[in-house]
Image (cartoon, rainbow, N blue to C red; front, side, top):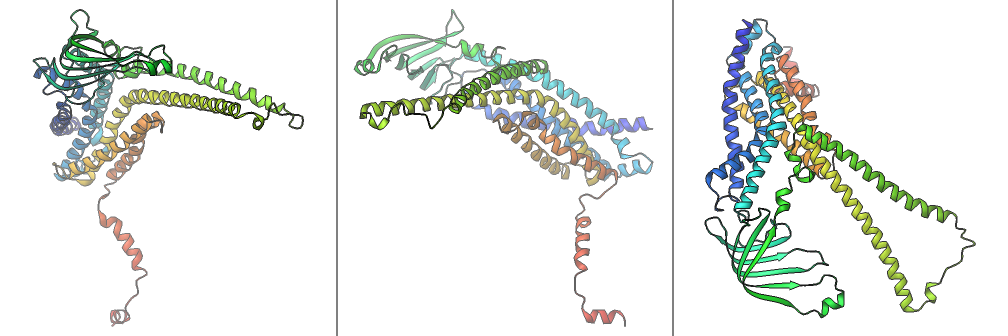
Length: 486
């Protein structure tokens, strides 16, 4: 009997589960596609490429959809049992709520394990596939990510603005502005042209060939020149009918390699992330130890020197007020420069430490997230099944409202904690598990209340003791008191 009952409970759960999962996945994927569509439509890309790219980018919503599906499905299933008095019949026959939920709990455990392996294996694979498609788009249609009339920095080392893009492969350009980014000590160049073509180099995929027509190239040759030479240098420009310029995009193509952890950690599975975290720990400890030693040695040296100075026997090396005006300015400027240099060094070290901590937090959250989302499925099942047994309402009315409220609160906490960790204001381990830590006591409380058949959402259950307490202090009318004994 119990085996048949187990299968009946599982079949009753799987019906709403697949329906809810399909609807939620469709809603999330459409929302994601709508956000990305403006960057893909009208760029000369075929519909198959767009659909494939959106699929591999959007498949990650499964990590959000599955916990919400389990929450809503468990509320609907147990609420339906309660509404049809099937739950009461099961309990009347001597079956406890824990035994009723046992087959569903086993199923949710399997789904949680599946979600972990999905995040550990499928999501890195989807990220690599999406990147492969993206690189293929850049190599075949380099203007796909360009917006007309807007300055962009998609190509490393350049700022570009193109007022109009046309052609079958979006290779034809009009009103082109190109500025080469460089340091303050390197040569710079700015190109303005009326028309042009931008396409991959046929001989080397690491380069884009930009062919410009009817324009002017402004150059500023300042390398290895002092300030006076730069001031006296004449403006240099060259008018051209045709100009071929090759742009190196190897940095974009090679940015996903393992030696670039800042960009590649999303492509790694759990074992790869664990290995990367261990290597970062070793590297960071070495960096902090070296920095600590340098700071300590500098301060320790000067502190000991100051201790050996006898203020009574110390004489002034030179009196600044006795120097002429030029010497005074020179000494003060040198002192200011030394202080500014030390301040810049400290600011640089501070920013370096902050950036290292942010990178570590991002990688650690990526590693912890697969475990935390799997546990979220179990917590949501405990909350959903307990609330369903208490509310005793099936269908898509009350269960949907309760699920949305819980889901919104949970993921506000989760995403806020993750953002705080990525900004360096919260430990990454705590951030990844904070929402689960907060939700777990509520799931246990709801399970206890459901097992006790407590009317958790009966308002009178909470108001009646308060009203009864305040009625003790209510003054009794004397006429009512007298009439009571007549």
